[in-house]
Image 1 (cartoon, rainbow, N blue to C red):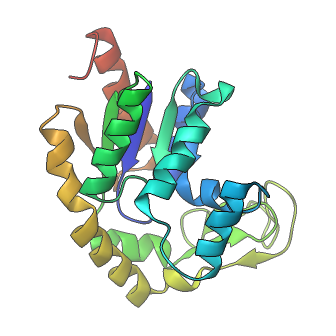
Image 2: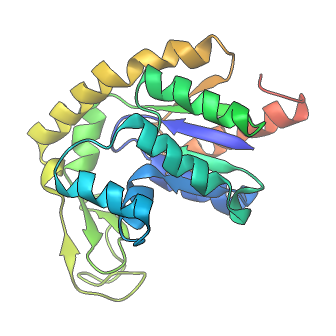
Length: 223
């Protein structure tokens, strides 16, 4: 089962991808994490990617596609994958389809976590992460069980992203709206796009996603 999770920054794609990964035994592929891992790999390809990232330039679409191509060929992707953070544009979506076709693969589901700008500002402006393990928290919705101590690794060190300021969140949403929303018709026309209420409680979002996945499976394909 091959899945794309779409949605603006802060819509919960990473959280839901982890839950799908654990429940269905398929691998989450975050392009941001993949880029960092590739850049640190020391390979010839990794050295090229690192040079691009260090220069502050955007990594070209064909380079990202090459990276995904290499990653899905690894044994842990045999059961499928979840793409989180890619594609962001119609040309990227087209390039991804072409690459998958060369492998005899296809996308089974494209799930959009629908969240409005006001909700995103509320979510992101209050979030912080563990500086050691990356566990996510929120000032109002998800505080550590022990104040000032990470639930996962016990670290007392937390960080906040500069781009989680309210004005930065609004700007990021506008970039998403301009660049990524135009790919929604591309997947709608193929009959594989499903919208999920990303404003709902985390567990409710998970249940809605599972409903999409199970209904498609029981009917023999996307519904």
